[in-house]
Image (cartoon, rainbow, N blue to C red):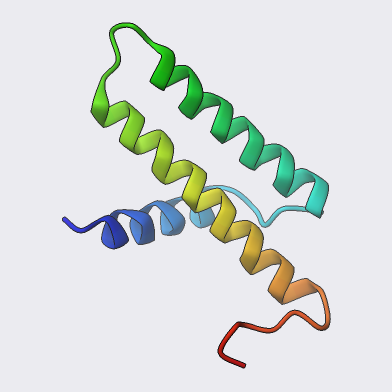
Length: 82
C-alpha cells in the first residue's frame, strides 16, 4: 500500500472517531501530542519501525485535519492553486 493510501485511511478513521478541532490551540496541542508520541517511539531502544511509521502517519493526519479546519472556518485562506 502506498503512503498516500495509508494517510487517507488514517484521516478517514480519525474523522469518523474524533470531531473537528474546536480551535487552532486545540489543533496545535493535538499535533504536538502526536509529535511527542512519535519522538517517544523513535527514542525507544527496542523500537518497532511499524509503530514509528504509524505515529508518523498520525502526525501527518493531525496536521492535515488542522489545515482542513482552518480552511473551512477562517476567511481568506486559499489553497496554493487558487
